[in-house]
Length: 249
Length: 332
Image 1 (spheres, helix red, strand yellow):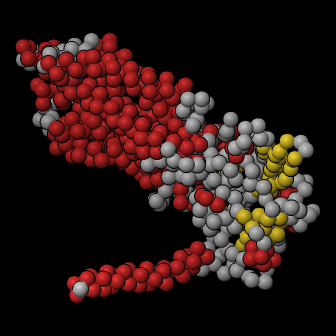
Image 2 (tube, helix red, strand yellow; image 1 turned 135 degrees about the horizontal axis):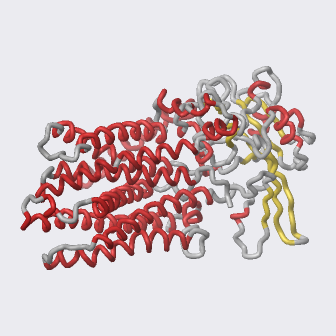
Protein backbone atom coordinates (compact mmCIF):
# COMPACT_ATOMS: atom_id res chain seq x y z
CA UNK A 1 0.00 0.00 0.00
CA UNK A 2 2.60 2.39 1.12
CA UNK A 3 4.82 1.60 -1.82
CA UNK A 4 1.99 2.23 -4.28
CA UNK A 5 1.19 5.51 -2.63
CA UNK A 6 4.79 6.56 -2.92
CA UNK A 7 4.87 5.61 -6.58
CA UNK A 8 1.76 7.57 -7.34
CA UNK A 9 2.87 10.61 -5.47
CA UNK A 10 6.22 10.42 -7.16
CA UNK A 11 4.55 10.19 -10.54
CA UNK A 12 2.30 13.10 -9.63
CA UNK A 13 5.27 15.05 -8.50
CA UNK A 14 7.04 14.43 -11.81
CA UNK A 15 3.86 15.31 -13.67
CA UNK A 16 3.44 18.49 -11.71
CA UNK A 17 7.00 19.48 -12.29
CA UNK A 18 6.43 18.85 -15.98
CA UNK A 19 3.29 20.95 -16.00
CA UNK A 20 4.96 23.69 -14.04
CA UNK A 21 7.90 23.70 -16.40
CA UNK A 22 5.60 23.87 -19.42
CA UNK A 23 3.67 26.70 -17.84
CA UNK A 24 6.83 28.56 -16.92
CA UNK A 25 8.18 28.04 -20.42
CA UNK A 26 4.91 29.27 -21.90
CA UNK A 27 4.87 32.32 -19.67
CA UNK A 28 8.45 33.21 -20.46
CA UNK A 29 8.49 32.26 -24.13
CA UNK A 30 5.15 33.44 -25.46
CA UNK A 31 5.41 37.15 -24.76
CA UNK A 32 8.96 37.01 -26.07
CA UNK A 33 7.79 35.37 -29.27
CA UNK A 34 4.97 37.84 -29.73
CA UNK A 35 7.42 40.65 -29.17
CA UNK A 36 9.86 39.21 -31.64
CA UNK A 37 7.13 38.86 -34.25
CA UNK A 38 6.14 42.49 -33.85
CA UNK A 39 9.69 43.66 -33.37
CA UNK A 40 10.30 46.97 -31.75
CA UNK A 41 8.74 48.73 -34.66
CA UNK A 42 6.46 51.61 -33.75
CA UNK A 43 4.58 51.33 -37.02
CA UNK A 44 3.36 48.06 -38.48
CA UNK A 45 2.13 48.72 -41.98
CA UNK A 46 -0.44 46.36 -43.42
CA UNK A 47 -2.96 46.25 -46.22
CA UNK A 48 -6.43 44.79 -46.30
CA UNK A 49 -7.81 43.88 -49.71
CA UNK A 50 -11.57 43.44 -49.83
CA UNK A 51 -11.89 41.12 -52.82
CA UNK A 52 -15.67 41.56 -52.75
CA UNK A 53 -15.19 45.16 -53.78
CA UNK A 54 -12.57 44.50 -56.47
CA UNK A 55 -13.87 44.76 -60.01
CA UNK A 56 -10.63 43.71 -61.69
CA UNK A 57 -10.18 47.09 -63.35
CA UNK A 58 -6.36 47.00 -63.07
CA UNK A 59 -6.22 50.64 -61.98
CA UNK A 60 -3.87 49.57 -59.17
CA UNK A 61 -1.57 47.76 -61.62
CA UNK A 62 -1.45 50.85 -63.85
CA UNK A 63 -0.93 53.24 -60.94
CA UNK A 64 1.92 51.06 -59.74
CA UNK A 65 3.46 50.91 -63.18
CA UNK A 66 3.42 54.71 -63.50
CA UNK A 67 4.55 55.32 -59.94
CA UNK A 68 7.75 53.34 -60.40
CA UNK A 69 8.08 53.29 -64.18
CA UNK A 70 8.11 49.53 -63.89
CA UNK A 71 9.51 48.16 -67.19
CA UNK A 72 7.33 46.21 -69.58
CA UNK A 73 6.88 42.53 -68.79
CA UNK A 74 7.38 42.79 -65.04
CA UNK A 75 4.96 43.81 -62.29
CA UNK A 76 5.13 45.03 -58.73
CA UNK A 77 1.40 44.64 -58.34
CA UNK A 78 -1.13 42.90 -60.52
CA UNK A 79 -4.66 41.49 -60.52
CA UNK A 80 -5.50 37.85 -61.09
CA UNK A 81 -8.86 36.62 -62.35
CA UNK A 82 -10.20 33.39 -60.91
CA UNK A 83 -12.93 31.62 -62.87
CA UNK A 84 -14.48 28.38 -61.75
CA UNK A 85 -17.48 26.14 -62.13
CA UNK A 86 -19.57 24.91 -65.02
CA UNK A 87 -22.43 26.96 -66.38
CA UNK A 88 -24.76 27.88 -64.76
CA UNK A 89 -22.92 27.32 -61.46
CA UNK A 90 -19.98 29.61 -62.00
CA UNK A 91 -18.05 32.33 -60.27
CA UNK A 92 -15.50 34.88 -61.30
CA UNK A 93 -13.51 36.78 -58.73
CA UNK A 94 -10.47 38.99 -58.61
CA UNK A 95 -7.34 38.69 -56.56
CA UNK A 96 -5.12 41.77 -56.43
CA UNK A 97 -1.55 40.76 -55.72
CA UNK A 98 1.48 42.53 -54.29
CA UNK A 99 4.36 41.86 -51.93
CA UNK A 100 2.99 40.60 -48.62
CA UNK A 101 5.69 42.37 -46.56
CA UNK A 102 5.80 39.20 -44.45
CA UNK A 103 6.65 39.24 -40.77
CA UNK A 104 8.80 36.19 -41.53
CA UNK A 105 10.03 37.02 -45.02
CA UNK A 106 11.61 33.99 -46.69
CA UNK A 107 13.43 36.26 -49.15
CA UNK A 108 15.50 37.98 -46.45
CA UNK A 109 17.52 35.12 -44.90
CA UNK A 110 18.56 33.77 -48.31
CA UNK A 111 20.00 37.06 -49.58
CA UNK A 112 23.76 36.51 -49.78
CA UNK A 113 24.66 40.21 -49.81
CA UNK A 114 22.18 41.55 -47.27
CA UNK A 115 20.64 43.72 -49.99
CA UNK A 116 17.13 42.79 -49.00
CA UNK A 117 15.98 43.37 -45.45
CA UNK A 118 12.95 44.12 -43.34
CA UNK A 119 12.88 47.71 -42.10
CA UNK A 120 12.86 47.84 -38.31
CA UNK A 121 10.84 51.05 -38.17
CA UNK A 122 7.80 49.97 -40.17
CA UNK A 123 8.22 46.34 -41.20
CA UNK A 124 8.46 47.00 -44.93
CA UNK A 125 10.69 44.55 -46.80
CA UNK A 126 12.96 46.46 -49.16
CA UNK A 127 15.72 45.77 -51.69
CA UNK A 128 18.83 47.93 -51.76
CA UNK A 129 19.55 48.08 -55.49
CA UNK A 130 23.07 49.36 -54.81
CA UNK A 131 24.00 46.13 -53.04
CA UNK A 132 21.85 43.55 -54.85
CA UNK A 133 23.77 41.52 -57.46
CA UNK A 134 20.72 39.90 -59.08
CA UNK A 135 21.44 36.30 -58.07
CA UNK A 136 17.66 35.56 -58.08
CA UNK A 137 17.84 33.48 -54.91
CA UNK A 138 15.11 35.64 -53.32
CA UNK A 139 12.94 35.08 -56.39
CA UNK A 140 13.17 31.35 -55.78
CA UNK A 141 12.52 31.71 -52.07
CA UNK A 142 9.44 33.95 -52.28
CA UNK A 143 6.31 31.76 -52.10
CA UNK A 144 4.28 34.54 -53.71
CA UNK A 145 6.39 35.13 -56.80
CA UNK A 146 6.30 38.88 -56.25
CA UNK A 147 9.95 39.46 -57.03
CA UNK A 148 11.47 40.03 -60.43
CA UNK A 149 14.68 41.27 -61.99
CA UNK A 150 14.32 44.86 -63.03
CA UNK A 151 15.82 44.89 -66.55
CA UNK A 152 17.06 48.45 -66.07
CA UNK A 153 19.17 47.79 -63.00
CA UNK A 154 19.61 44.02 -63.19
CA UNK A 155 18.65 43.82 -59.54
CA UNK A 156 15.75 42.23 -57.69
CA UNK A 157 12.73 44.47 -57.40
CA UNK A 158 9.30 44.26 -55.86
CA UNK A 159 6.49 46.20 -54.20
CA UNK A 160 7.62 48.22 -51.17
CA UNK A 161 4.24 49.59 -50.11
CA UNK A 162 5.30 52.81 -51.91
CA UNK A 163 7.93 53.52 -49.29
CA UNK A 164 8.61 56.98 -50.71
CA UNK A 165 4.93 57.87 -50.31
CA UNK A 166 4.11 56.27 -46.96
CA UNK A 167 7.13 57.85 -45.27
CA UNK A 168 5.63 61.18 -46.34
CA UNK A 169 2.27 60.27 -44.84
CA UNK A 170 0.64 59.41 -48.17
CA UNK A 171 -1.13 56.17 -49.04
CA UNK A 172 0.46 53.76 -51.50
CA UNK A 173 -0.34 54.59 -55.08
CA UNK A 174 -2.52 51.51 -55.63
CA UNK A 175 -4.61 52.30 -52.56
CA UNK A 176 -4.93 55.90 -53.64
CA UNK A 177 -6.26 54.92 -57.03
CA UNK A 178 -8.54 52.01 -56.13
CA UNK A 179 -12.02 52.79 -57.50
CA UNK A 180 -14.00 50.52 -55.22
CA UNK A 181 -11.90 51.14 -52.09
CA UNK A 182 -11.00 47.48 -52.15
CA UNK A 183 -7.49 48.28 -50.94
CA UNK A 184 -7.14 49.74 -47.47
CA UNK A 185 -3.75 50.63 -46.02
CA UNK A 186 -2.72 51.56 -42.51
CA UNK A 187 -0.88 50.85 -39.29
CA UNK A 188 -1.77 47.63 -37.48
CA UNK A 189 -0.20 48.95 -34.29
CA UNK A 190 -2.79 51.73 -34.15
CA UNK A 191 -5.98 50.11 -32.85
CA UNK A 192 -8.08 52.95 -34.25
CA UNK A 193 -6.82 52.51 -37.81
CA UNK A 194 -9.18 51.04 -40.39
CA UNK A 195 -6.86 48.11 -41.17
CA UNK A 196 -6.53 47.18 -37.51
CA UNK A 197 -10.31 47.23 -37.12
CA UNK A 198 -10.88 45.23 -40.29
CA UNK A 199 -8.30 42.62 -39.35
CA UNK A 200 -9.87 42.41 -35.88
CA UNK A 201 -13.48 42.14 -37.00
CA UNK A 202 -13.56 40.63 -40.48
CA UNK A 203 -12.81 37.01 -41.43
CA UNK A 204 -9.53 37.87 -43.08
CA UNK A 205 -7.27 35.37 -44.81
CA UNK A 206 -3.70 35.52 -46.07
CA UNK A 207 -2.12 33.82 -49.06
CA UNK A 208 -0.37 30.50 -48.52
CA UNK A 209 -0.60 30.65 -44.76
CA UNK A 210 1.04 27.22 -44.56
CA UNK A 211 4.35 28.77 -45.62
CA UNK A 212 4.55 30.38 -42.19
CA UNK A 213 5.50 33.76 -43.56
CA UNK A 214 2.87 35.75 -41.60
CA UNK A 215 1.92 38.08 -44.45
CA UNK A 216 0.82 41.64 -43.80
CA UNK A 217 -1.54 41.74 -46.74
CA UNK A 218 -4.93 40.46 -45.59
CA UNK A 219 -7.82 39.51 -47.86
CA UNK A 220 -11.54 39.63 -47.23
CA UNK A 221 -13.65 37.35 -49.38
CA UNK A 222 -10.73 36.18 -51.54
CA UNK A 223 -11.17 33.04 -53.60
CA UNK A 224 -8.11 30.95 -52.87
CA UNK A 225 -8.93 28.51 -55.66
CA UNK A 226 -6.01 27.50 -57.82
CA UNK A 227 -5.70 25.44 -60.95
CA UNK A 228 -3.83 22.80 -58.95
CA UNK A 229 -6.87 22.54 -56.66
CA UNK A 230 -9.00 20.79 -59.25
CA UNK A 231 -9.98 17.78 -57.15
CA UNK A 232 -13.13 16.72 -58.92
CA UNK A 233 -12.41 15.47 -62.45
CA UNK A 234 -13.96 17.84 -64.92
CA UNK A 235 -14.14 20.68 -62.40
CA UNK A 236 -13.17 23.87 -64.15
CA UNK A 237 -10.82 26.38 -62.54
CA UNK A 238 -8.97 28.92 -64.57
CA UNK A 239 -6.62 31.56 -63.26
CA UNK A 240 -5.53 34.50 -65.41
CA UNK A 241 -2.49 36.11 -63.88
CA UNK A 242 -2.22 38.85 -66.48
CA UNK A 243 1.53 38.48 -66.37
CA UNK A 244 3.89 37.19 -69.05
CA UNK A 245 4.13 33.99 -67.03
CA UNK A 246 0.59 32.78 -67.33
CA UNK A 247 0.69 30.31 -64.48
CA UNK A 248 0.96 30.89 -60.79
CA UNK A 249 3.67 29.08 -59.03
CA UNK B 1 5.75 26.24 -68.47
CA UNK B 2 7.05 28.31 -65.60
CA UNK B 3 9.61 31.03 -65.82
CA UNK B 4 13.07 29.54 -65.34
CA UNK B 5 14.97 32.04 -63.27
CA UNK B 6 17.88 29.69 -62.96
CA UNK B 7 18.77 28.18 -66.31
CA UNK B 8 21.70 26.46 -67.98
CA UNK B 9 24.45 28.52 -66.32
CA UNK B 10 23.26 27.43 -62.89
CA UNK B 11 22.74 23.83 -64.01
CA UNK B 12 26.21 23.82 -65.56
CA UNK B 13 27.69 25.37 -62.45
CA UNK B 14 26.09 22.84 -60.12
CA UNK B 15 27.46 20.03 -62.27
CA UNK B 16 30.96 21.44 -62.85
CA UNK B 17 31.48 22.58 -59.26
CA UNK B 18 30.36 19.12 -58.21
CA UNK B 19 32.89 17.41 -60.50
CA UNK B 20 35.68 19.71 -59.32
CA UNK B 21 34.84 19.41 -55.65
CA UNK B 22 34.48 15.65 -55.99
CA UNK B 23 37.81 15.35 -57.80
CA UNK B 24 39.55 17.46 -55.13
CA UNK B 25 38.06 15.42 -52.29
CA UNK B 26 38.79 12.07 -53.92
CA UNK B 27 42.32 13.10 -54.90
CA UNK B 28 43.02 14.36 -51.37
CA UNK B 29 41.68 11.26 -49.70
CA UNK B 30 43.57 8.95 -52.06
CA UNK B 31 46.75 10.90 -51.34
CA UNK B 32 46.18 10.86 -47.59
CA UNK B 33 45.33 7.16 -47.66
CA UNK B 34 48.88 6.46 -48.76
CA UNK B 35 50.72 8.76 -51.08
CA UNK B 36 52.77 6.17 -52.83
CA UNK B 37 50.57 3.11 -52.47
CA UNK B 38 50.45 0.49 -55.22
CA UNK B 39 53.83 1.30 -56.68
CA UNK B 40 53.19 5.04 -56.86
CA UNK B 41 49.88 4.61 -58.61
CA UNK B 42 47.90 6.18 -55.76
CA UNK B 43 50.03 9.21 -56.30
CA UNK B 44 49.23 9.18 -60.00
CA UNK B 45 45.51 9.07 -59.29
CA UNK B 46 45.87 11.89 -56.77
CA UNK B 47 47.80 13.83 -59.42
CA UNK B 48 45.09 13.43 -62.04
CA UNK B 49 42.46 14.52 -59.51
CA UNK B 50 44.51 17.48 -58.38
CA UNK B 51 45.15 18.71 -61.91
CA UNK B 52 41.49 18.24 -62.84
CA UNK B 53 39.80 19.78 -59.78
CA UNK B 54 40.30 23.52 -60.29
CA UNK B 55 39.35 23.52 -63.98
CA UNK B 56 35.63 22.61 -63.73
CA UNK B 57 35.27 24.63 -60.53
CA UNK B 58 36.64 27.77 -62.17
CA UNK B 59 34.68 27.15 -65.38
CA UNK B 60 31.46 26.62 -63.43
CA UNK B 61 32.00 29.71 -61.33
CA UNK B 62 32.61 31.66 -64.51
CA UNK B 63 29.37 30.32 -65.95
CA UNK B 64 27.26 31.23 -62.95
CA UNK B 65 28.19 34.89 -63.36
CA UNK B 66 26.26 34.86 -66.64
CA UNK B 67 23.09 34.16 -64.69
CA UNK B 68 23.43 37.24 -62.49
CA UNK B 69 20.85 39.91 -63.24
CA UNK B 70 23.45 42.62 -62.88
CA UNK B 71 25.74 40.89 -65.36
CA UNK B 72 22.93 40.59 -67.90
CA UNK B 73 22.06 44.26 -67.39
CA UNK B 74 25.73 45.13 -67.78
CA UNK B 75 25.81 43.34 -71.13
CA UNK B 76 22.55 44.93 -72.26
CA UNK B 77 23.56 48.44 -71.27
CA UNK B 78 27.31 48.25 -71.67
CA UNK B 79 27.75 49.40 -68.09
CA UNK B 80 31.17 48.27 -66.90
CA UNK B 81 30.34 49.04 -63.27
CA UNK B 82 27.63 46.38 -63.20
CA UNK B 83 29.96 43.67 -64.50
CA UNK B 84 31.77 43.30 -61.24
CA UNK B 85 28.89 43.87 -58.88
CA UNK B 86 29.21 40.27 -57.72
CA UNK B 87 32.12 41.54 -55.62
CA UNK B 88 29.38 42.47 -53.13
CA UNK B 89 29.21 38.77 -52.29
CA UNK B 90 32.63 39.01 -50.76
CA UNK B 91 32.11 42.24 -48.86
CA UNK B 92 29.92 40.48 -46.34
CA UNK B 93 29.08 37.09 -44.93
CA UNK B 94 25.77 35.98 -43.53
CA UNK B 95 23.86 32.77 -42.93
CA UNK B 96 22.49 32.57 -46.46
CA UNK B 97 23.65 29.28 -47.98
CA UNK B 98 24.71 31.25 -51.02
CA UNK B 99 26.88 33.56 -48.93
CA UNK B 100 28.53 30.70 -47.06
CA UNK B 101 28.77 28.79 -50.34
CA UNK B 102 30.49 31.67 -52.13
CA UNK B 103 33.15 31.90 -49.46
CA UNK B 104 33.63 28.14 -49.29
CA UNK B 105 33.80 27.95 -53.08
CA UNK B 106 36.35 30.75 -53.24
CA UNK B 107 38.49 29.05 -50.60
CA UNK B 108 38.11 25.69 -52.32
CA UNK B 109 39.16 27.09 -55.70
CA UNK B 110 42.14 28.81 -54.11
CA UNK B 111 43.21 25.67 -52.24
CA UNK B 112 42.65 23.43 -55.26
CA UNK B 113 44.76 25.70 -57.48
CA UNK B 114 47.59 25.56 -54.95
CA UNK B 115 47.09 21.82 -54.58
CA UNK B 116 47.27 21.40 -58.36
CA UNK B 117 50.46 23.49 -58.36
CA UNK B 118 52.15 21.01 -56.01
CA UNK B 119 51.50 18.31 -58.62
CA UNK B 120 52.28 20.41 -61.68
CA UNK B 121 55.81 19.25 -62.29
CA UNK B 122 55.97 16.07 -64.37
CA UNK B 123 58.54 14.62 -62.02
CA UNK B 124 56.37 15.15 -58.92
CA UNK B 125 56.85 12.30 -56.52
CA UNK B 126 55.35 11.38 -53.17
CA UNK B 127 58.48 12.45 -51.31
CA UNK B 128 59.57 15.57 -53.20
CA UNK B 129 60.08 18.99 -51.63
CA UNK B 130 56.41 19.97 -51.96
CA UNK B 131 55.26 17.04 -49.84
CA UNK B 132 54.39 19.13 -46.78
CA UNK B 133 52.34 21.69 -48.67
CA UNK B 134 50.64 18.95 -50.67
CA UNK B 135 49.67 17.01 -47.58
CA UNK B 136 48.37 20.15 -45.86
CA UNK B 137 46.26 21.11 -48.86
CA UNK B 138 44.94 17.56 -49.04
CA UNK B 139 43.82 17.78 -45.42
CA UNK B 140 42.07 21.05 -46.27
CA UNK B 141 40.70 19.61 -49.50
CA UNK B 142 38.56 16.88 -48.00
CA UNK B 143 36.31 19.16 -45.91
CA UNK B 144 36.33 21.99 -48.49
CA UNK B 145 35.40 19.70 -51.35
CA UNK B 146 32.61 18.10 -49.32
CA UNK B 147 31.37 21.57 -48.31
CA UNK B 148 31.22 22.76 -51.93
CA UNK B 149 29.52 19.54 -53.00
CA UNK B 150 26.93 19.73 -50.26
CA UNK B 151 26.12 23.44 -50.05
CA UNK B 152 24.41 23.52 -53.44
CA UNK B 153 21.92 20.95 -52.17
CA UNK B 154 21.39 22.96 -49.00
CA UNK B 155 20.97 26.12 -51.05
CA UNK B 156 18.16 24.59 -53.09
CA UNK B 157 16.76 22.58 -50.23
CA UNK B 158 15.88 25.23 -47.68
CA UNK B 159 12.99 26.87 -49.50
CA UNK B 160 9.43 25.82 -48.66
CA UNK B 161 8.35 27.79 -51.72
CA UNK B 162 10.10 25.19 -53.88
CA UNK B 163 8.62 21.92 -52.63
CA UNK B 164 10.52 19.76 -55.11
CA UNK B 165 13.84 20.95 -53.71
CA UNK B 166 12.66 21.26 -50.14
CA UNK B 167 14.12 17.96 -48.95
CA UNK B 168 17.19 17.28 -46.81
CA UNK B 169 17.90 14.28 -49.04
CA UNK B 170 18.77 16.66 -51.90
CA UNK B 171 22.02 17.74 -50.19
CA UNK B 172 22.95 14.08 -49.69
CA UNK B 173 22.10 13.30 -53.30
CA UNK B 174 24.24 16.18 -54.60
CA UNK B 175 27.11 15.18 -52.32
CA UNK B 176 27.12 11.59 -53.53
CA UNK B 177 26.69 12.61 -57.15
CA UNK B 178 29.61 15.04 -56.83
CA UNK B 179 31.88 12.36 -55.45
CA UNK B 180 30.75 9.92 -58.14
CA UNK B 181 31.29 12.39 -60.98
CA UNK B 182 34.62 13.40 -59.41
CA UNK B 183 35.79 9.78 -59.52
CA UNK B 184 34.51 9.50 -63.10
CA UNK B 185 36.41 12.64 -64.06
CA UNK B 186 39.65 11.25 -62.62
CA UNK B 187 39.17 7.84 -64.25
CA UNK B 188 38.38 9.48 -67.57
CA UNK B 189 41.52 11.63 -67.48
CA UNK B 190 43.53 8.57 -66.50
CA UNK B 191 42.05 6.50 -69.30
CA UNK B 192 42.73 9.26 -71.78
CA UNK B 193 46.15 10.48 -70.73
CA UNK B 194 47.48 7.88 -68.31
CA UNK B 195 50.31 5.63 -69.38
CA UNK B 196 49.22 2.32 -70.85
CA UNK B 197 50.42 0.52 -67.74
CA UNK B 198 52.67 1.36 -64.90
CA UNK B 199 55.18 -0.92 -66.61
CA UNK B 200 55.92 1.98 -68.89
CA UNK B 201 57.50 3.81 -65.97
CA UNK B 202 60.00 1.03 -65.89
CA UNK B 203 59.69 0.60 -62.13
CA UNK B 204 58.96 -3.00 -61.41
CA UNK B 205 57.95 -4.38 -64.73
CA UNK B 206 56.61 -7.61 -63.31
CA UNK B 207 54.28 -5.96 -60.82
CA UNK B 208 53.69 -2.58 -62.42
CA UNK B 209 50.75 -3.53 -64.61
CA UNK B 210 48.96 -5.22 -61.78
CA UNK B 211 49.42 -2.30 -59.42
CA UNK B 212 48.03 0.18 -61.95
CA UNK B 213 45.04 -2.07 -62.42
CA UNK B 214 44.65 -2.41 -58.66
CA UNK B 215 44.52 1.35 -58.32
CA UNK B 216 41.94 1.66 -61.07
CA UNK B 217 40.06 -1.17 -59.41
CA UNK B 218 40.00 0.85 -56.22
CA UNK B 219 38.42 3.79 -58.01
CA UNK B 220 36.03 1.70 -60.10
CA UNK B 221 34.81 -0.24 -57.08
CA UNK B 222 34.41 3.03 -55.14
CA UNK B 223 32.37 4.27 -58.05
CA UNK B 224 30.13 1.21 -57.86
CA UNK B 225 29.64 1.87 -54.17
CA UNK B 226 28.93 5.57 -54.76
CA UNK B 227 26.41 4.80 -57.48
CA UNK B 228 24.77 2.35 -55.09
CA UNK B 229 24.50 5.10 -52.49
CA UNK B 230 23.19 7.45 -55.14
CA UNK B 231 20.43 5.00 -56.09
CA UNK B 232 19.57 4.79 -52.40
CA UNK B 233 19.51 8.58 -52.09
CA UNK B 234 17.23 8.86 -55.12
CA UNK B 235 14.88 6.26 -53.66
CA UNK B 236 14.86 8.18 -50.36
CA UNK B 237 14.34 11.48 -52.16
CA UNK B 238 11.32 10.17 -54.05
CA UNK B 239 9.90 8.32 -51.05
CA UNK B 240 10.12 11.29 -48.70
CA UNK B 241 8.32 13.45 -51.22
CA UNK B 242 5.83 10.94 -52.59
CA UNK B 243 4.77 9.54 -49.24
CA UNK B 244 4.35 13.06 -47.90
CA UNK B 245 1.07 14.86 -48.15
CA UNK B 246 0.52 18.13 -49.97
CA UNK B 247 3.21 20.14 -51.69
CA UNK B 248 6.15 17.66 -51.74
CA UNK B 249 3.99 14.84 -53.10
CA UNK B 250 2.44 17.13 -55.65
CA UNK B 251 5.82 18.47 -56.77
CA UNK B 252 7.63 15.14 -57.07
CA UNK B 253 4.96 13.82 -59.45
CA UNK B 254 6.70 15.81 -62.18
CA UNK B 255 9.46 13.17 -62.33
CA UNK B 256 7.23 10.18 -61.67
CA UNK B 257 5.64 8.28 -64.55
CA UNK B 258 3.25 10.59 -66.34
CA UNK B 259 5.08 13.72 -65.21
CA UNK B 260 6.56 16.24 -67.61
CA UNK B 261 10.17 15.39 -66.75
CA UNK B 262 9.65 11.66 -66.15
CA UNK B 263 11.43 10.48 -69.30
CA UNK B 264 14.34 12.80 -68.77
CA UNK B 265 14.71 11.66 -65.19
CA UNK B 266 14.24 7.92 -65.58
CA UNK B 267 16.13 7.60 -68.83
CA UNK B 268 18.72 10.37 -68.51
CA UNK B 269 19.52 10.11 -64.80
CA UNK B 270 18.60 6.61 -63.69
CA UNK B 271 19.22 4.41 -66.75
CA UNK B 272 22.07 6.25 -68.49
CA UNK B 273 23.66 7.85 -65.44
CA UNK B 274 23.35 5.09 -62.88
CA UNK B 275 22.24 1.66 -64.11
CA UNK B 276 24.31 1.52 -67.28
CA UNK B 277 27.66 2.42 -65.67
CA UNK B 278 27.06 0.34 -62.56
CA UNK B 279 26.21 -2.76 -64.61
CA UNK B 280 29.29 -2.35 -66.79
CA UNK B 281 31.51 -1.74 -63.78
CA UNK B 282 30.07 -4.71 -61.92
CA UNK B 283 30.87 -6.90 -64.91
CA UNK B 284 34.57 -6.14 -64.34
CA UNK B 285 34.64 -5.53 -60.60
CA UNK B 286 32.73 -8.60 -59.38
CA UNK B 287 35.17 -11.26 -60.72
CA UNK B 288 38.01 -9.44 -58.97
CA UNK B 289 35.99 -8.89 -55.83
CA UNK B 290 34.70 -12.44 -55.49
CA UNK B 291 37.23 -14.62 -57.26
CA UNK B 292 40.38 -12.49 -57.04
CA UNK B 293 40.71 -12.57 -60.80
CA UNK B 294 42.98 -9.89 -62.26
CA UNK B 295 41.09 -6.69 -62.84
CA UNK B 296 41.31 -5.43 -66.41
CA UNK B 297 38.73 -3.07 -67.83
CA UNK B 298 39.50 -2.08 -71.43
CA UNK B 299 40.25 1.63 -71.74
CA UNK B 300 37.52 2.23 -74.26
CA UNK B 301 34.93 0.79 -71.91
CA UNK B 302 36.44 2.76 -69.04
CA UNK B 303 35.94 5.94 -71.03
CA UNK B 304 32.36 5.04 -71.89
CA UNK B 305 31.56 4.33 -68.25
CA UNK B 306 33.08 7.62 -67.12
CA UNK B 307 31.31 9.55 -69.84
CA UNK B 308 27.89 8.18 -68.96
CA UNK B 309 28.46 8.82 -65.26
CA UNK B 310 29.30 12.44 -66.12
CA UNK B 311 26.27 12.71 -68.41
CA UNK B 312 24.12 11.28 -65.62
CA UNK B 313 25.52 13.82 -63.15
CA UNK B 314 24.67 16.65 -65.51
CA UNK B 315 21.19 15.25 -66.16
CA UNK B 316 20.56 14.99 -62.43
CA UNK B 317 21.30 18.71 -61.96
CA UNK B 318 19.32 19.51 -65.10
CA UNK B 319 16.20 17.64 -64.02
CA UNK B 320 16.39 18.84 -60.41
CA UNK B 321 16.90 22.50 -61.27
CA UNK B 322 14.13 22.44 -63.87
CA UNK B 323 11.67 20.43 -61.80
CA UNK B 324 12.11 22.71 -58.79
CA UNK B 325 11.18 25.74 -60.83
CA UNK B 326 8.38 24.10 -62.78
CA UNK B 327 6.54 23.16 -59.61
CA UNK B 328 5.39 25.35 -56.78
CA UNK B 329 3.20 25.13 -53.71
CA UNK B 330 -0.39 24.06 -54.30
CA UNK B 331 -3.14 26.61 -53.94
CA UNK B 332 -2.70 30.27 -53.19
